[in-house]
Length: 253
Image 1 (spheres, rainbow, N blue to C red):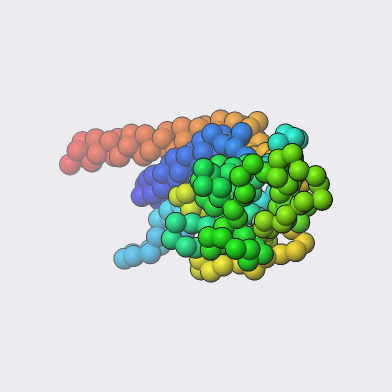
Image 2: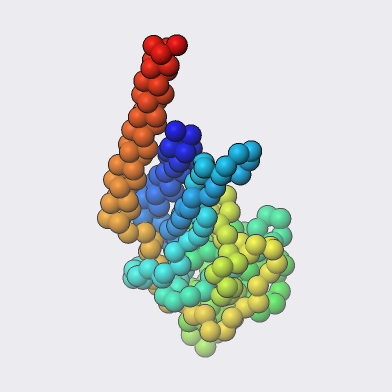
């Protein structure tokens, strides 16, 4: 009896966690550069006094699907998409690095190049300006090369007056070292900065979509809903069996 209760109880609890993860994936099917979450569960014996007859369920692996998503052409000058592996490095308020594949870049009122969420993009060239940030001169037309180099031309000037103002810091840390934070950005587990990788390139005028499969996530939601119902039925069966056993004991007593 106790084995049934422990298995059903912990299984139902972790199915609710899986449902929350799938709900988050579904909510981000249109989020630029989003990486879907992956969960895996396994049964573990419950150790204690007596025989190890009881088991419970634990989340044995929490990871992410790093499969690149298709690029969508936007034609916008400050949009950059990463078609293969790699990340754009941004500066966090605490001075550490964060990593994103959302290449929908903006220029702040102070001329700082930043992400849509307001995180400054880190400069990989050491150009003058705020530490680690890229400053865009006012009244300038911007172009971004495949290696992340940003060039500007004063509005109305000839192309010969091109000025390089910075280069996106593009990195490619081992995926197993990355974790997603509460800010939606990825971070290294030790929070140490990652060296730039020259092999990472961007596609100007494009954005990467989300790699969440809406159909697959919906099918999984239906499947785990049925599993949850099964676990609830198991708990009800255990309760009914316990009541029947109590009635039998009261009669024989």
